[in-house]
Image (tube, rainbow, N blue to C red; front, side, top):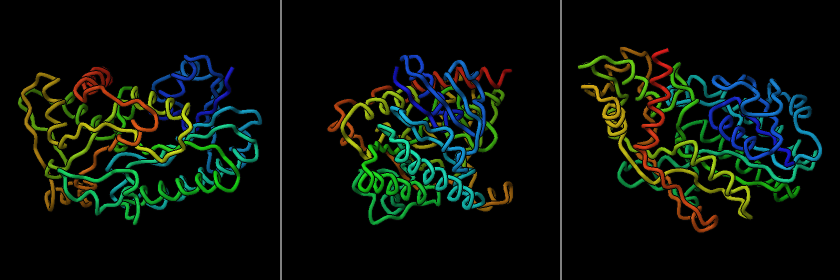
Length: 332
């Protein structure tokens, strides 16, 4: 039986990944600072260790000798309202960096056979993402570095950290840059939710003929990947001989207004979109509207070349699946 550890398995992507590994017959240990919000421990793992991975002693206890695979997804992160306001920058950089420093060292000490690190598309240079119609997120465009957030800078640092441990200590690593992963059993309220969940929640909570707020002018572009396809891509990368970094995301790019309209269309309600920005936004929320870069879209050519597989689920299908789940949470 393959022995795997999912760090951050109490979170959204980590929970789905752990559940998939458990269903495939692996012995799964999760370590996280919080319990999973929607699944009981026995639904996603054999062991759940509640601990703070910024503490090296916790990481030392969690990672045993003889572990086949460690999946490192633990991070201090959230949606635009958490990452781009600037209010959480120190915690994001300090906490996530400490976790990765601890994990890389301990995986070498315990001779872990293979390690996955989840980076983010937020590490790509801001100057490559100013044109919403033609963003450049091909893997080799990462340098010269210029991420648009401290979250992105930390991700870039930690990529280099794991690659350095690969060069100097032969740590067998796989690195993927996630592009806006969404789906059921994820955060859907409270400020840390991503754009698809936020749009769906607003629509589910709205009455007929209401308006829903969309931050910014709504013309900024993104691509979004359903979590089931994300997990499939991670597992295929781990089985390959390619270390990365490599993008894991969708190439189906939409504007944020189109994403909101998709949620409205799925609901069948008569709802309008209201774009709030500038002074009006500041007066209401007290901080600058956190819209991020103007355009971001996954470039999947390298993944297809190295792994021989590509994601194929249309965004509407994933949004429909996620809408059903969030609508159920709202109606509870």
